[in-house]
Image (cartoon, rainbow, N blue to C red; front, side):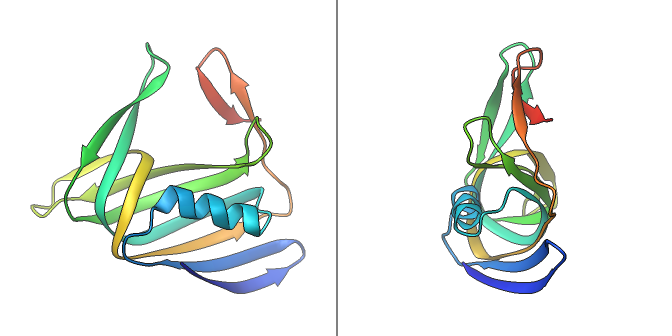
Length: 144
């Protein structure tokens, strides 16, 4: 991944991140967050994946039901945030909508995706950091 700092002032930082073919998105975002001490960021992106695993949150199970798409898809919508997780390090929470070759779409929580040919992310960090806490009533960590 190529990263470029676009702007930095008053505690705000904005980056352009360009992913390469084959890079895994969530893992690469987490690595970048650790290396640059991101703790309160949001991002959007466009591009394409060679495969993707999307999750749908099952309220009864309190867990994500994964759906794997093992095909080339266009990233129609991609948005998320980076916040401190209950374990203390940064955590990525992202949702994506992808389009198949026939323009039908699938969407959900982004669990895993491999880029092909590129993914272009604009990421902005706020000087006020975000924190997640585990909420037993919903069965997941939510922003506090």
